[in-house]
Image (cartoon, rainbow, N blue to C red; front, side, top):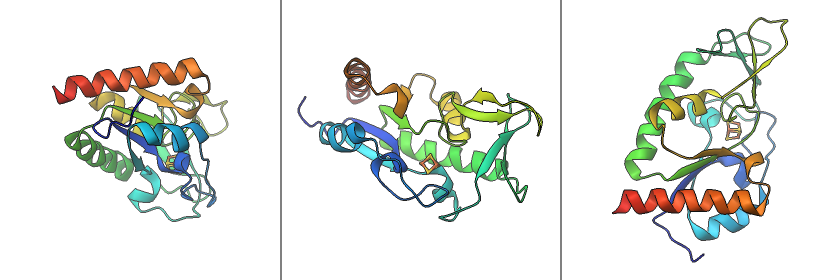
Length: 175
Ligand code: SF4
């Protein structure tokens, strides 16, 4: 596929090699960073650092009601929920206003996970599987947008399917 800059895909910044994770590390995804980047316009986004969390930082967990999870610092108990949800709504409005055709997020993150973030209904309970807060607001705001995480893009077929989805979305958006 030739490069088409009109196709815009938001990506968790740590998948592009940015050192934004809570531990100061990164999790580059080779296909996204080196191949997808040549075919579409990638828009890096990191909910936690863009919200103002430091690098490195205290990790956070999702806790409480699965329908309305809270984002809580694992040691301090600091509650980030309202700030994160408000930031997500603002950032998603910006991204969609600029035009967005899909999103690739980091698995298992309490912000970015796509059904793979751990959520603790009670402090000592076994975790459930949840969307991260950014993903949750994305689904509510843009129900038709294709949302995948890095682990959904391991096979050639999955990658082709994702590309086909974002191409179709861009064609509809730019008509
Ligand atoms: S998973 Fe999301 S919040 Fe965490 S470092 Fe990556 S982009 Fe930032």
